[in-house]
Amino acid sequence: MQGQKLVYSPVSLWKNFDSTSLPFEQEVIDVNEVDGIVYTRIYFNGVQYEDGISRIYGVFAAKKNKKDLPAIVIVSDLGKGINQNEVSFWAKKGYAVFGFDNMGKNDESEHFSKYPDSVSYANYLSAGRHLTHCDTNAKETCWYHWAANTRRAISYVAGQDGIDKESIGLLATKDSAVTACMAAAFDDRLAACAVVFGVCYQEMEMHAGHTLEEVERAEERERWFAGIAPQSYLMHMQTPFFLTIGANSPATDLDKTYEALNLIPKQTPWAVWIAEKMLDAGGESFVKNLDKWLTARLKKQIDESLLPVACFRKINGKLNVIVRIPDEEEVQEVQIFFAHEAVKNSVRYWNKLQLSNVADGIYRAEVEVYDKTKACYAYSNVRYRGGLVLSTNLIEVDDNYLKDVQTSKKTKTIYSGNMGVNVFQVYSPLKKDQDLNYEEKKLEMQTGPFDIRGLAGRDFATFALNDAKFTKGEDSVLAFDVYSKAEQDLVAGIVTNYGADQRIYVATEKLVGGEIWQKVCFALDEFKCDRAKSIVNWGACEVLCLHADEDIVVNNFVFT
Image 1 (cartoon, rainbow, N blue to C red):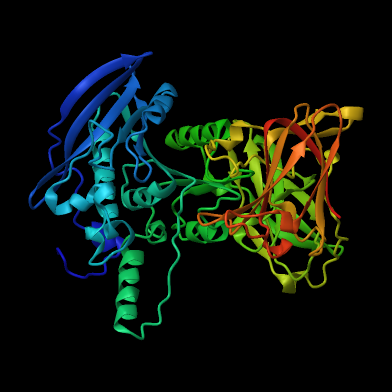
Image 2: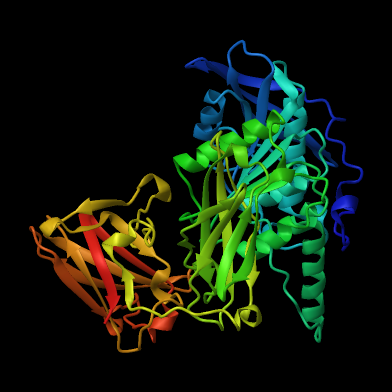
């Protein structure tokens, strides 16, 4: 009811919604063929409101004259229109693809979805509090209308000729995960729902409720979490679900994401890929893995009941990670990653462990524990022969479990060339026009002067700086060697409060260039933020970043 404060659950919110009752009344804007792909731009009826019917704008793309194609409905990212490149990419992969607009009216697009005046807030640029709050009820938020559009889009695709109606998938990125969860939870026409770098949980804010304002705020949050929050929909998820998340994603919490995924009903298959050395963007390997899962799931060639499982075990006083893989014959590669507790979950230093195959389908890796007062975490990525990579459960042990575990000696050496590429990754917050497609820029080993090998690239980052493995004092200096053929500036940055509100402290060193290894040293007080302030202590340093305009080779990072 309009304007009335109501608490909707996912079930009651969508109880009477029928995504097929309204005729589509399709309007074709144009049809174009490019490289054998036919693109049809259309409008069709969305949802009936008191003052009119919304009109959904979208692009349907498929290979010409092909039949029984698996289909993908793409939910555009929050505040963005149709990603034409994404539509084309998946169409070329052999899918029938429908990308549609939720953003609504904007000055940059000729065509967009149109909403009646009564729900003008469904236009992203006019959303206001309807985007972030549930002041009345869930039906009067942007998310409800965007999810309704998504369900109508599914209905539209299901009625198209040339597609396999049993093989329709939903694909969402980042914040559009909220819309995808709302749409997929109760739609049995979907064979798959894939969320990429998306937030599948939202923090539940607690309010004491002593004042009228606090009570109203608590009630508003109750309405939001009951009717909008993605974890509320995962509890009802009927569609096979796949999530890709970066191991160091600043946007979401890995632990709470797993808690949310475990809310999915037991009868609904789900899987996750924790992409190592990824934040909130991916490159070729991410796309390949998503394609592998979509293909396998839409063709029903995957059994998530046979997913690998990890656990911690104490063996002869040492902490070990054990991974069990039911379908051993299909395994191509197993990787195990371990981390100590960090100041926040997103800045854990995930260390790749050496493992052994101790029996059919059972792998073991011994863990070096450096601080028994800090919890330990691990997961494993398993690559199957078809190329699909799936992760195990995220596992944790606390200080009580670790009290009788042997500890290893700490070190001042953060990185040396014999460690390969495991310690650093590509991350470039020091660049103003940074390209978020980090994974395409691989770091690699390269030989420098005196045949000494180091890590080569232009943008480096590591979460290792504040790991329990390394010992340092407040007066410690960070020192390392750099080989640069060119004379140039090396910019070093330390990130604190990693995430949306992060602050970067910067220091610069002049590289003289030439066939030499140059020693570079930074004291803590040399790093300055935009307010010309220094970092208080090394314990606040969450990420170390380096940037050079031309290629450099680095080696021998130590605290002195």
